[in-house]
Length: 312
Image (cartoon, rainbow, N blue to C red):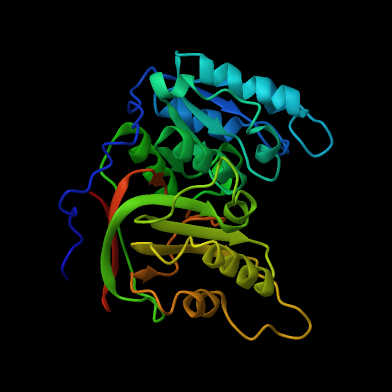
């Protein structure tokens, strides 16, 4: 199989790569969205085993209706860790809903001078997109503290590798609906629902020339169809260099069946485009949620034997 290679003249030189972590570094856990169901014991133990010092935000123990504190507290908590240069990475404790309520309240400008890793997925897609669009910051789409007890060992290993600067390459089994081909581009994306929710906002991204990753959970098939078509009608899908489809879990259908699977929905929308498409990538609302560094150049190479994704 011909492996994906860095494209000539392409690099992520315009994106900010935070310093990799090292033993003794201080990291923070905060909740920009939904409140936590219990203490973060497993996550703290894991991060400490990696040699990291863990600082907990006020939001970890806060509750305001379904949120981890009101908007003001969640804003203040996130701002505190952004402005504290001794904090080298910020873990969003969980997703749910709420990040979009505070995104415009937070001053992220310090990250352009003192970049640090932001880690999370699902609702944290808002943060990933906003930081890439406005500050060209690389971030990590990966397991969050609330997910640690159920996370696969492999997913946690990839998170550690991403944070500590070890090489990450993925080669997975092919899916019959994959579209073969090769492509290179900066990896962007996250949760499909959130990508649609931020369309036209200051958090929205330029998708042209990028490799897009999408995943979602608990959506109806018709809603997935609607959201993929919304991205396409907004011009987001036609100029991609690759598409990576992660987990679409707990998908629901109506009493009258929609009639298509998630891969079929997506392929119908992108059938006239010519970039490679990879299905069933192990990332999203699944135990084996492997880490992806968003904002960094990747190469994608798909044939009938495997699908390979490498950071170039």
